[in-house]
Length: 169
Image 1 (cartoon, rainbow, N blue to C red):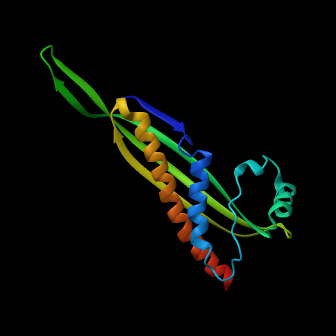
Image 2: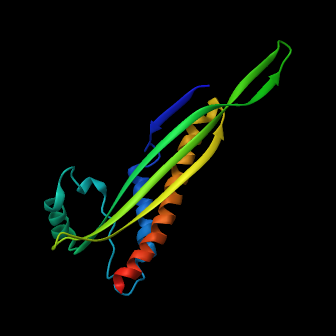
């Protein structure tokens, strides 16, 4: 039995990030205490930029509060004993099945930029189990990756709702 593990973010391109964040943002746009939500591309954030980077974003976008969304995803592939056997005139061909696990975590942390205070945070997780043949492994892993990101985002939105309700009180 062979196993492979990889940390993956191949399915989460900048376009996919923007779509995912836009879906999350649209959920909160209708709240009475939210005047505006702007999805800011990750290119505006610098590694190690800290609050000085957030101050720049505050100046550029005129924002007081920022929600930073981070993510981590790992994929594990394991050969399975389930296999397909093709009978031909020459003989049997065996194609091994692959078991795929995709684990994703999204985490949103909301900060008041001026006070540098964390207001609240909300995580979202997902674990997608899939199967594939070696021929379509990379395609199935990409599909599982996006599905896992979408599921984690749904859970994160539910947790954000809970945190916002507590914060509002």
